Amino acid sequence: MLRFITPIVALLLALPAHAAPDSYIDRLLNKPVPGGVAVVDLGPSAQTPQASYQGKPVLVVKQEARWVAIIGVPLTIKPGSQQITAKTSSGTRTLPFTVGFKAYPEQHITLKNQRQVNPNPADLKRIDGELAEQIRAYRSFSPGTPSNLLLDKPVNGPLSSKFGVRRFFNGEERNPHAGLDFAVPAGTPIKSPAAGRVILIGNYFFNGNTVFVDHGQGFISMFCHMSKIDVKVGDNVPRGGVVGRVGSTGRATGPHMHWNVSLNDARVDPAIFIGAFQP
Ligand code: ZN
Image (cartoon, protein in one colour):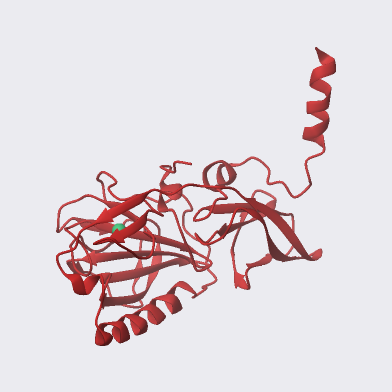
């Protein structure tokens, strides 16, 4: 028997030094698929490492004596090898990680308002401006460490539409679903899943009444379709603090809570952070 075990042991010993050691961060957050999260070990470093992916700064946290980068993998990334750049006290290195495959289902939605499927030229101008404003918010990078990496559910209720679903409105394909929906009644308070700072609020064509909360280092939550916003830009929100109420403003077929989570300007599956990810 030993004869058969030995090659396996040898293989384990040969794992590259950059493999992330087992920890709650790896176990719970390392889901390296398009629209998922990659956790990459940066090793020990006397100074706080700086890491970047596709030229954008990445969330870095310390776990015991080591540092790890927590990277958002955009939905548009193809399975295969990717790399980050990391600057630690021992120099600048590139570190690889592998993106696996994930199949996302389709969803067909009927909207009574055809203008929400094919907006008119004035709408398109408005949408462009709103998109630019929201992308700027997603790209902000504040220095603080997030209060918690495992997030609280912003509302208690069943999940309705999952992240990444390819959506067809009245038969026409539009952007995939960039967040997670919860089926909850209008008026339900939406609680911030971690502490953060309100960096943007708006009333948008697609997203309706919207709040962006920056949890630190590009880790950002967005809530939309709200009936009411209870915060203003610059407010510091504690973990569990109410940011607004569930509604159906913008492009929505009924009241629900839509939640985006973004890392390094990549929208990722919020289910990962609440322990509800399905491969
Ligand atoms: Zn949604």
